[in-house]
Image (cartoon, rainbow, N blue to C red; front, side):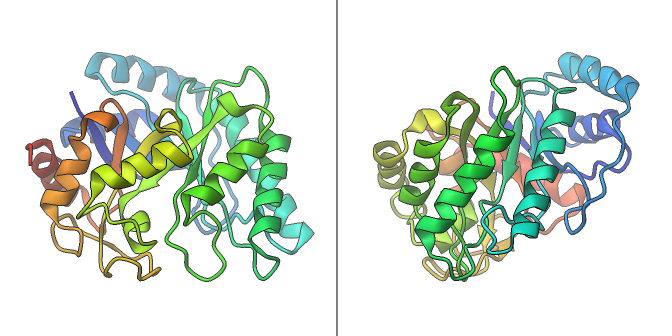
Length: 275
């Protein structure tokens, strides 16, 4: 069965997210580890986590994806900003140990004029600081659209980061359909070719999760503006082909479209239908 869900609010805890996911036909979901524009994290309630894990097992909810806040920039030119990213990510990974076997996704960051190679080096340094042998969470680098000085809009950039990581078994990639299309990869017209390129450059075994989003902008625009499924330049059929592609079988697909719960339910139903 396809693992598909959406981004949910974590404000009422894990059990509540699990119940919301089940109520809309989802068997995975994504959540922010803390305020996406800030730094404060809600305390973990072990009883809530225990109740969620029991509920998820009974409902067949698979791996879930935790998303780091947008404010993190591990390749900033400012040491204070890099240190904030490091400490936040380290704390998030400690908290994720309550939910072993899941994913922690983050935006690689922007090199802000230092150059792409310096950005790659700084991101890898941060990962080497926070990754601990034996940890039970896989950290995912998200593919980016290429706004400004973003790192990660090319598969080669992500591969170079992964190459520098000292615990390679603890890292992978989350592919965002809007981002890769905006970055210039034609997943609407040549999905097979894009996946072959990913496999050649990074290796499909490193692809661990997918963000399923339509886009408000044409291919190669480098804009990063998500759209509802079927209402953007990618279109419903291209996204259905992505969700049902045999090379992506078993991965968690998470919607990040501009929607409320009812809209996500409708999109999940649409995407479960084969192209």
